[in-house]
Image (cartoon, rainbow, N blue to C red; front, side, top):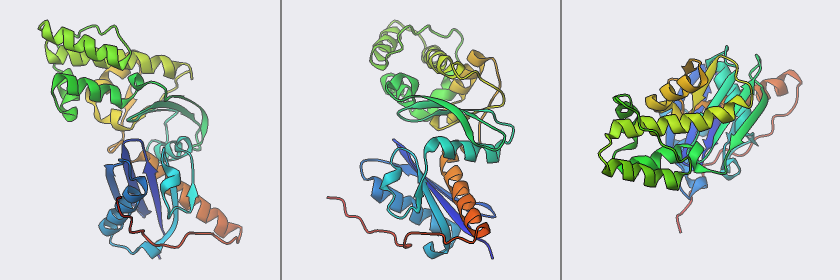
Length: 280
């Protein structure tokens, strides 16, 4: 009989759910918003529907991420550092360094061969090192976020963006645009500026290959290219870079359940009920 495990990653901008059976059988991604408990319930319900299994069949559930305490049905809360390490190690056993670029922060994690974190460093004080930086620039240029990466790869003469502060960089980009600098050149310059900031943070951990990029930043081909050039190493990207934390959470849950079984211990779990949460 197949055992099922679930991971919920409540990030600052996106909430992700993964259900594991014999591999990933369902994953869901949705915007977090202010109603974190409601979104956690929603993505879990959608994941269960995709998997075609009842909630009661989930053996163990682990929540992680910025809003992990707001998942009422989670059996355990685990830090995103641990979960990202576990998730990436399962996808890339050769991984030694993880760079996670989220909506509001950026972190770098060194992991060992067992998929456990050895060290990490995080920037959560300034938007200039996060996905929010790219969002602001995209809004300034009047383009969609999903267009940014492809357009930047068309650059012929990347602009030098001297400001690393999001507000000042936004003004600088607007000024350069009014001067006639092409959008692809501006975007390439923005990516180089962001990659420079991230690489300086990452290098404080003494980067080791293989390097894997996760989070929304992994969907931006222009940023992947710029970061690879700055670090001087190839950057690996998961097929879906947004769900690695949730995947890791599910894997942690499976490990907890297996250890409990081996030690003949009771596995304590929450009641499998999805709340009906009304928006006030």
